[in-house]
Amino acid sequence: MTRLLPILLGLCLTALAACSTGGLGRSDGVYAPGIAGESDIDGLLVGHRLMAAGQYELALDAYTRAAGQQGLNVDTLSALGSANLMLGRLGQAEALLRRAVALDPDFPPAWNNLGVVLTEMGRYGEAAEVFRRAYATDSGNSDQIRDNLRLALAKLEDPGYSDTNENEQFQLVRRGEGDYLLLTAL
Image (cartoon, rainbow, N blue to C red; front, side):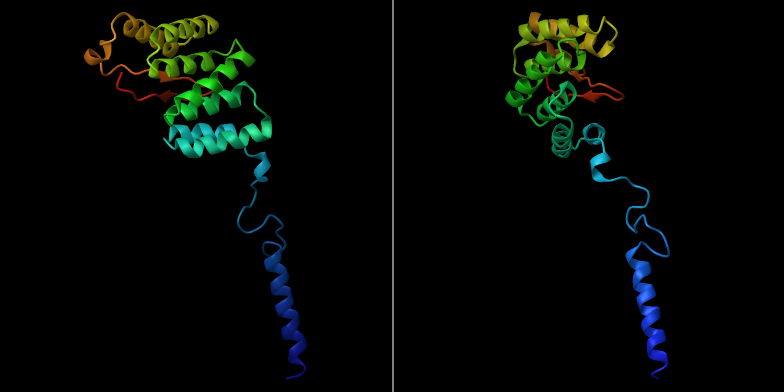
């Protein structure tokens, strides 16, 4: 029995050592093989995916982390503003989007999303001007911005416009792939 004790102790230590390195010589861990550290995860990309999934509060958290990593640049400010808009925090959304367009006046998504905020606030004249700016900055390449401008002008001319055209929706625009629809009862 005393001869088996060192052998059993050695086997136990070998088994414990294998567990601590992720198992039999692997050093990438059991739970996250091949995944980089948290600092390598793009908070903007995560936030965009959460926005597309309708998880606006979680998207706001991801955008806030991205702002902490990248700083408050036009992308993070615009993303934070868009998430606040979808959460109904219009004052915060407006302030963030105004900072984004001040930082980069040639960024069409921030102008467009500011126009959506102003429309939600009932400031149709200013919204129409902001959509014009977004459309001009984009050189007329975005159908979404053009449609938003058209809707804002119609709303400006006839405040009851939405009563007859409930299928029309203002659309959020972001840099990169994908669209966000702002569901509204305009």
